[in-house]
Image (cartoon, rainbow, N blue to C red; front, side):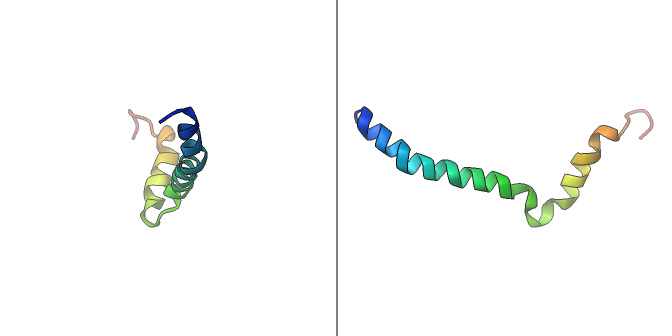
Length: 52
């Protein structure tokens, strides 16, 4: 493989792979069972180790 072959691969399939990965990462917090974990993560900084 030369530079042009790698560039063509990155321009086509690499872009598609990065787009799918991006959409998957965007959709991950909105999956069905994630609400409790998201709420727990959002309030984690307000929990005090000494006072529960």
